[in-house]
Image (cartoon, rainbow over all chains, first blue to last red; front, side):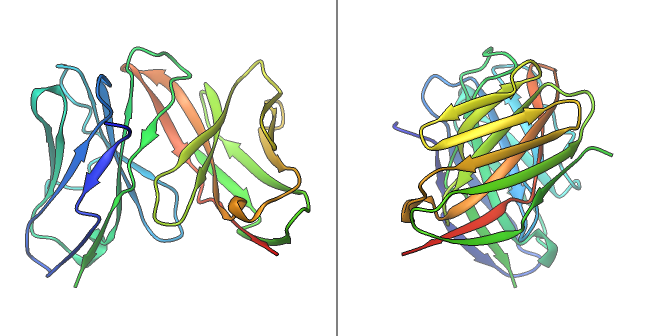
Length: 116
Length: 115
């Protein structure tokens, strides 16, 4: 694909429901990141995948959040029992991987999650 | 605590004018500093990346500067265009470990260019 794609673009859910957000990275990119962008705040790192290595989950805010990456490509971020404070834009980014300290992250358009 | 602070929070300028956005950071260890442009409803797009040894980098009408001693960076936009209206995000890498950059994001400066 031409760039990183994410779906859905918008998601409105009720408190307590589970949601799944999807990210399709750029073809050939081995590294994938999830971030959360709350209103008026900087992006917050959630999780990092690199190839077949164990993901770095250090940014996940609670055990209600989980992510997986199947076949080294598509990734899904799952939020269980959503809370109103989970409302934010969830951004996915990919890099070619192994690019070193100045590798460029390419971001998707994000999924805007609203928890009522 | 690693922090990236940007100023001003928002800015309005007239088309054709220049402007400078500021970024101060307290991030350690420091690996590199990036500026991103984020259009409304879109993901951030990289403008420049500077390492410790670089003090200026240009990308078209965008010029970023870095003073690693004072831990300050600026993004200068020349001859602004309506399409420059966006949020500009300063991002500092707190080291490269585990195979990736630990990025600390500023909250951004929202720029509006008016005709």
